[in-house]
Image (cartoon, rainbow, N blue to C red; front, side, top):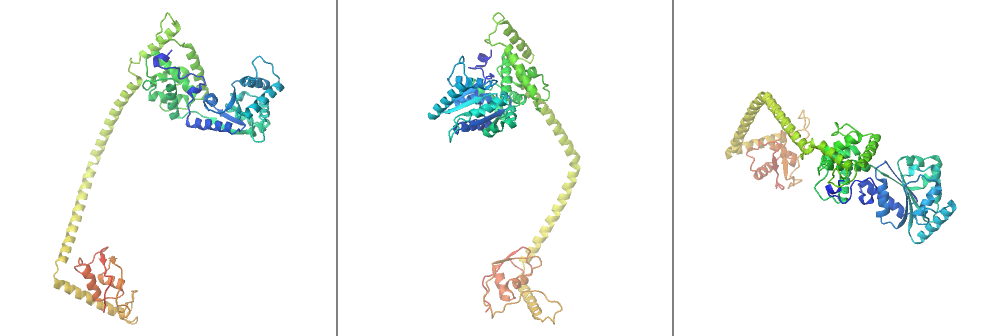
Length: 509
């Protein structure tokens, strides 16, 4: 019905497991690679499980048709048979018998054994794929284990893939099937698609169907599809297929969120009020979605876009009904455009309210801010005055005359001499002694090699630094230091953290 309307070459969201539409998500790539690995390395039994609709059958079809494995595949999709019936189907799949042939268990086993041996000589695998294996009973599963005993000393001659719902794992874990469980060489699982993979899955199927137009499903529409499908590919197909039917009925070539809401509401009657905050949908609800959608799809028959009441009355009535429903939505303007316009108005209103609140807050705190400004200005003025006074002291120090400096130097030397006399006193002459470095006589060392610089600490004088570095005081040392530190105008005035350069060599002879 809608294929020509949207420009598809084939219908993109059919429920048949067509391997041409096989989409490899990150998880499915791992599962697919695991099965290919198991077949190539002849791992015997392999187990594939997953919830209904997660793409197990499509994966198996892709494995058979698109993997490029050199193997003979037998695919059994309805295993609700006894063991003899399964053997008969296997012979038919391998071209060893016809539907009308009457076979016994012994005859079937011999034919199958001969065929497997022939394929082994040709270096070709024999792979049996049993889908919906959760329907097999314990007795049939045990006989399949015996069938897998066909092997050489080094290789399994037959590979068996059991695929089914999680119930299959519970069946195999039973005590009477312990030997079968032990022989399963590989286990893998299909899972629902995540949000990103759901979007890519939809676009992938549209591309395979030959769609060349602009984006068909809106971003919010795809988000709603992922929300209600929970990433299950079969349910995604159901919702997308019905959305395209609704879009065709509304004469609308872009599927927006309004159409998807209508589709989901008609399929499962779930309230859409909380759709922006996705809730978990019960499994029985999802199952109801699929079943209801199939019934509605069957009710709308496939006809050309130009439907007339004379050629197809039922389809004509359906299309008219759908178009009437969407005509109340405002013609060509989509619900997404209205949503964007409505959101813009609310954003403008909220922004205005926020601005008014900020202005009010500034008005309340303006008085406190003014007080803070005044206090800050007074502190800044005090710092400025202190800086000016310090600068004046420095200028006075730099403007001293040579005679004043010579007087300061003599005073320094007298202090040094007095300190030396104090240090040379015996302990009996002093009540308190200080722990200072013992002076080094010029007889022992004529030339001193010391540090290149020293940093002034709190409470230091130039005399203290000379004694700390050279171990004794000598006017020659002071002259040498003042010569290479011209910035020192007054030996008694040095600043904390000031770096003073020291002469490397001083001749004391």
